[in-house]
Image (cartoon, rainbow, N blue to C red; front, top):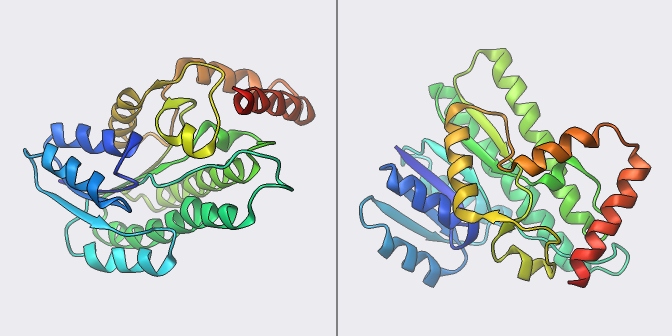
Length: 252
């Protein structure tokens, strides 16, 4: 079995690679940082590891990545690459936001569509799209990131239903973690107000549940409880809560 992971050089993507390798999966690891990929490849000596240095923020690079790997027998696609940017929408840097949309949405959209076609044709394969608990909510002070993860979640759900109606054996899942201890915090310039789960635990739960075919993967009991109670409050009240929660993260 073989998995392709974008954003594999750190955080959840790196720990997904480690966990899959422990289960005997061969890997195609994709990221921009060649030195990080090389370190990870040298660590995972028990399986075959191919590294590809590219920027999935470029649509052309996404198409090239697919062409480079479409005949490699990929059984699992993990769209993990992504980043966030904190701040008010009006003042946030537009170019960084557009790059975020390219990485968080456009790259995932392209790779999901291209690999899904092949998976459907052979009636097997797994796609794991890394969304976020942000996908369930509005996100004042982190608006573009939250909106991008809403896109990931809803796209994944729609594809899941299309596959189900066809009776397809292809599986697709959305990973929706809350706080996870990764480099994301430093890139987005935020600090979580509550303790996050470990990246290793998140990766393990995500892989196991995706292989079982679970649509939405929430790897935290605290977050599951929060999502349950979310349905009992109004959108405006939720906006106030989200704003105050995000402001505390930005101030830490």
